[in-house]
Image (cartoon, rainbow, N blue to C red):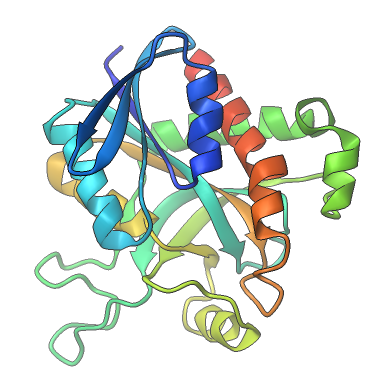
Length: 249
């Protein structure tokens, strides 16, 4: 097996992953800290993605071109859009789209110019393995997180979903914004700020990728509430448990 990249969207997620790596060594490139080591017997490079599409694309490119990773796994949080996608659920991407890409009328809305497509697929085999890992962890969420932590955020019977994740360079945090996205892209399950750019880089460089997002809110007027506590107590613990389960196979 080759070297796998793990891109974390939040500092707390990266810290939890690094705490599980017995031999991580830091390398600083372009102002980013890349941690090279092993996790569950696999050679990994862990890094904070940074926020937004351009920053995440730069990080992904460095992972492939400088560190020679053979696959990329992205983990973070997102706002839920799809019906039945609740706080505490996990969404694994089948495909990713930039919801703020619009070069019309020259190109159709959402289509990336000169690509002839708006959606970039995640690797099917990686995504299915990631879905299975997430399902296994969520089935035992009480063990991994504790019933009290789950109850504190109103989480009961968390589920895994697979489908479209959309990305844009703004934090969607009002009911009007999320409602407009649902109307325009009714099959979108979640919205975040990096995944589609990472998927485009991986498409360009021929590297398989998978994207997983824990739902922290419903991308509406309550999206800012308890966000930091959710990352610390729920999302970061999900991430490390699911990534480790994924790497074990």
